[in-house]
Length: 306
Image 1 (cartoon, helix red, strand yellow):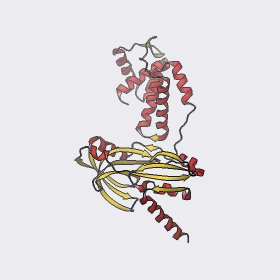
Image 2: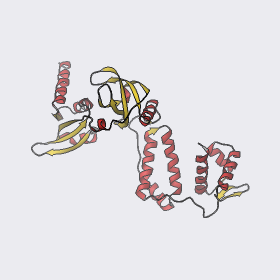
Image 3: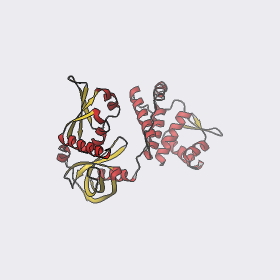
Image 4: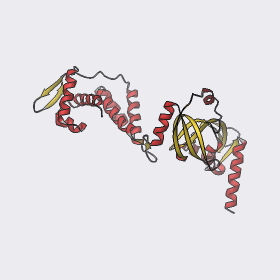
């Protein structure tokens, strides 16, 4: 923690705790008592009214407080739940920062609002379905820097659609997380179109020195495939629980006991395994290419089982 952050944190602790000894502050911030003495002097010189009580510690002059943050109750709840979700679901530097942020916000909220927010957030918990997100993963960090600096990235990628390894240069512009997996989206120079790449299939990733210009037109006209699937009414409830990330909307079909759902994807292979998992209760109506792929997969399964 740098000195500016520590000074602010000391001020928050004094406002919250009332009175603290130098040794307690030193232990909390893992610094020496001499450092705490200097920090207290710096706060006093900046105009913060701190009283030193020999043998008892330090406290703020009565009536001094930090300006309150103007949050509504819903805004405060949203911030607390968002921070707790991040703390529970992720690991790395950001969750640690989220914990510090909650502490700072909690201290400056009015007491009644703080109690209401606490009572609401205490009854909601988040449990990660798999491994926590590693927001400090080297791949993720390099891609964030490449996107920020508009640098070309070279990928050695294992494609699922044709089970081959290809080398390609991409111009990355977005990272997104879906169904437990990170993806990077960008302009693929090999395919000359917008593509999404699953990071778990990236064998090697290198940032090139070459910079690229934004391709606004390419981003706007990136090709998408509309997929329509008819589900039997008996499984619609379960489909909604395990909905595919490309879901757009649904409509009931009055002429039959089924529901039509629509999806938008960059490639049909993104939804093929998911549709197959529903068996005969799911019928792809369009596009024809996806119907053909499903027919091919079903024929392969039939040959394996006969």
